[in-house]
Picture 1 (cartoon, protein in one colour):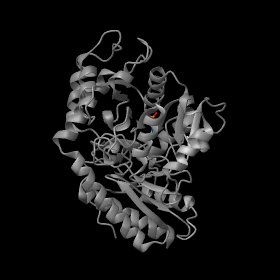
Picture 2 (tube, rainbow, N blue to C red):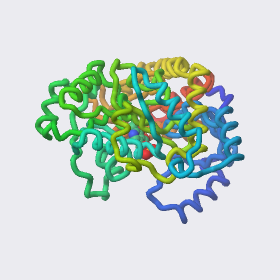
Picture 3 (spheres, rainbow, N blue to C red):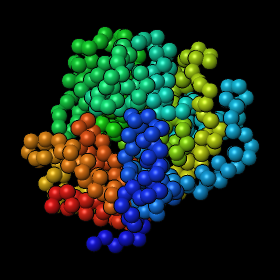
Picture 4 (cartoon, rainbow, N blue to C red):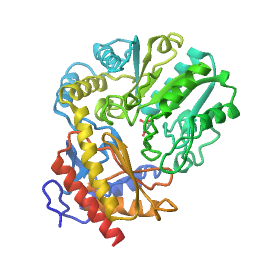
Length: 437
Ligand SMILES: Cc1ncc(COP(=O)(O)O)c(C=O)c1O
């Protein structure tokens, strides 16, 4: 029996008000926009979501990792109200504004290392990754792009090419961009790969003097919450130095405090050349950025990168408050605490249920991989989705991940309380019991 303080399910899902919106969606919204939750949100605060029919949920998805500081953080809301009263848009390259430069400074100041660093902004994670590639190509005057197995980098032509999951991200969308080469990834639970294996694969695929950039997620998100072994990023840094290409980190999901450090790569003692950020940067407003070594960032021709809406003033104001909130409210330490708490609950599930094959993560980027058999490690994608669905219908939103959809992942707001975590985890445990008997 769940002791409910934060969640409540009062109607069948969807309730009548939500059902009316779903009917409209069905008729007017393009069908590929498949929706996950069987309800329509009315409002949200912190990590709690309420739907149009009064049902309440603990949200472990954090808007797919965009809400590290929580939904409607007080200082973000205040800055947005203030900005609305001044101006909404100019295009920074037409009429510049201060929040763009201030956020660039704050981001550069959060890159550990000697610098100098520079930053610029875009709208989405995919745009940040595309632009990191453009910047690296302009700097190196080379073409080829190295990516990894299990990678997710976005849905534009170049970034879907860089992504390693055909269904649904690439199905029917070819032909793809050229000069993208995929390297083996050390998926420690399933596959042994050494630094030498990676270098030999690189040499077999492409002349290394053609390589402009290697793009890698420091902790793989969509591809299954994979934390690399300690040697991996330092070895990739060495390869970049040896062959003279740029090392760009895709921190779109792992960055902005998620793993207990501002950037996830800080756990691995390396200095990257470029870092892509998005998602939690602006607490839910569309904003992404590339930050990196000034000489590389300055390489493209004047006006070679940009876009009408990039670094929108509202989003920049939100971004400034997000970074200040992380610093002033000690949210990095909070990420560690939240992660430990959730990992302990996940490990308790592993002790109870054979289907849990692996529990892993860094800070509050925690996942569990479900398998049909612990010996064969056959992925249990169907069971994972049944469990996530059962939890969702009982009041807790858990996203899934992985090439085979068999990873339950947590991208919860770092401001979630311990009591809210426990209520959500009790719901998840109930979902395991319901599905597995
Ligand atoms: C690591 C990573 N890179 C890039 C992206 C693409 O970001 P967006 O959906 O904002 O384009 C995502 C989105 O999930 C991501 O997780």
